[in-house]
Image (cartoon, rainbow, N blue to C red):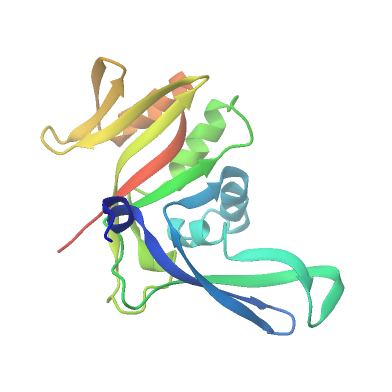
Length: 205
């Protein structure tokens, strides 16, 4: 049967993998993704390697579409590079929400790393640059709407409130208006709150 969670957050993809050395394709398989894992270090390294000029979506895609392992066809003794592609199933629509799950190296993150992460997190993004969406005319736009952030063992939520048209912090029973995005960046840097989960809402014309 239908699932609200699957319909809202699920990205139903076919994963294909091939060796970049010999172009040998491995069997594809289908599964449902509910979030995009984004290791902070890999994200930051991709950004540095691009000279800080590449699009956020391409950097995000770069955190998952390359892997290194043995190829049964051409390299059984040494790891080689594989290309990984995720393609939305042609019978499925893009999800109503897209979620990025940030993987940090630890819980004690510097203000500088938090600032770097926030510079990589796009306020608006085109999902068709992260995964292949064959049956929808690009762009497939999403806007950042909420982040769950962590300091120590304490979580806060920061969400965009369209009624007051500003970002708002929810900390247990306390609600604080932060204003524009610059206010969010300053709050997280000063409090060393690590963004853990970023929620994007699809923009439907």
